[in-house]
Structure formats: C-alpha cells, structure tokens
Length: 186
Image 1 (cartoon, rainbow, N blue to C red):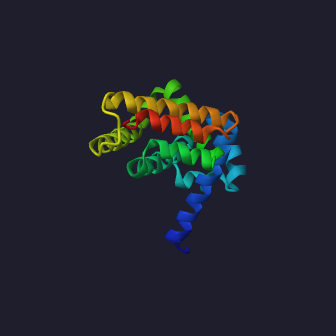
Image 2: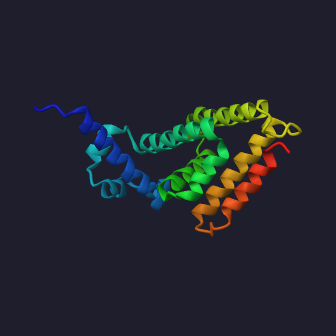
Image 3: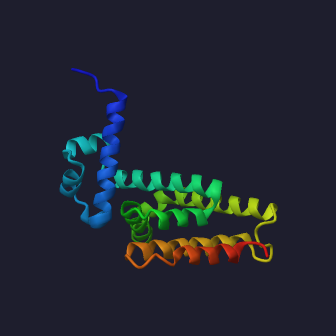
C-alpha cells in the first residue's frame, strides 16, 4: 500500500479545517452536521474523521488555531491591533468560530473547561503586553491593569458581535482610536 506524504496529510488537514470553518460560520456548531461538513470540505466523513476524532475536536482545532494567532498578535502589537485586523479584513469564518466559542463557553461546561487554558493564554498575553506598555510609560497608570484588560476584552467581544451582525464598519477605525486613547498615558 502506498504511503501518503506528510505534505499530503497536512494539505488534507488544511482542506478540512478551511471547509469546517466555512461550515461553522454559515451554519453554527449545531447546524454544521457531518453531511454539511462533507459537502463543505468535499471529503467523506471517513477522510474528515481520519484527521479529527469528532466534530468537537475539529471545532476545537479551529478555535485553538485562532487563539494561537491572537496570542501572537497581542504579544507583538496588542489587543487593539487584533481588533484593527478584524475590521481591516473581516473573515466570516473566524468571526463565526469566535461567536461559537462564546456561545459554547456559556452553554457547554465540557467545552468551557477545555477552552479555559486557551482563554487564559490570551488573557495572559494581553496583561503582559499592558504591563510592558506601562513600564515603557505609554499606558495610563491611574487604572489597574485588570480593569484595562477587561475593558479591551469587552470592546473586542462587542466588535465581534457588531461585525457578525453585518453592521456598518466605516466608523470603527475611529472608535478604536478612542479605545486606544482611553488606555494610553496622557
């Protein structure tokens, strides 16, 4: 039996992830049935579940992929940059996954427990970035880091809901300028 190359396996995994992202964005977690996943990826359930144990593992892989990307951006440029990128290139797939993460954290205790380490990584990266900014003198010193981080996280969550609802975005760069001004030292 011929062996499949690592490159082929990685390409197939990427195909599955990309198709699943589109399916979750369009149909939500519950609506992205195996049949929908098959159609969206162009692969059989056997091919899909050769790479992922089940639909939950597939969804978690997407959520973790997004969390890892967010941690990198937050570490280098801050949480406001994550939001600017969301505005600059709205990705319905990523928005859909983030909305589903928020919903599942609220409604699925098992998912919430599994997601907690990734949520904590994002929070740690945000707080570490804010601490570095404060040490450099560019972050206001009269407000606790936890409050500033909470403020930025609430704005991000609201932005996700705004973008997912298809509301106007032409003013959002200015809104993020206000957000940045609110956390910067004066």
